[in-house]
Length: 83
Image: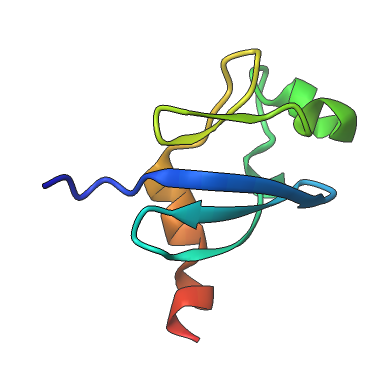
């Protein structure tokens, strides 16, 4: 059994926020703003481009190859999961 979380659903909310759901049922809003730094993430600062995400390899990714590790997204939910 793998301990790597897997995103099974992602829905755009607003700005740079996406509501993600993991295979284990954990879910919540993730604000991607802190990760939009550096050349590969620069296009994602444009909200219109940001909305063009898809699920690939168990995480959220964009056409330019940008993605955030599913473990990182899962950790971003930690405050919501423990509340």
